[in-house]
Image (cartoon, rainbow, N blue to C red; front, side):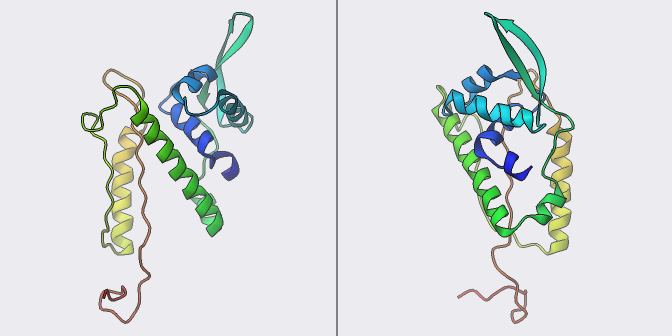
Length: 186
């Protein structure tokens, strides 16, 4: 499942179908114009064969069958157990795929006619916060609770999909020789 889902093109297809959206492969190609159509078709097929996508509907269009895909509700995911069993190289690969998707999605947004980062309230910032493991666990739980409330939102009046990425990792290894457990800064 890691190999199936942790691919930049497949992740972008999953994001494009999130929120209960149903789309044809042609719709996906139109929403991912920076990816060659043959590549989108191939990766949709892989996701469908891997149990991530369902065919929601089929319609005949000019003699061909057009399939409408959606994310399976019971689709396989990369849960905590999989994350725990991942090697450092698996994590490098996953992080690289995630960053590639983030960069591709941001560039696609900026390349759209009429994109207006200020009016669209885009945001990106990075900073260091100091938390104990207990404080981090509590904060992560609060964030998950807040995001869970809106995670199941679907398309609706005034709504548009927004990609949210949260990344955290320790920046220094704690040591016993400093009062706060972190290396002294020079």
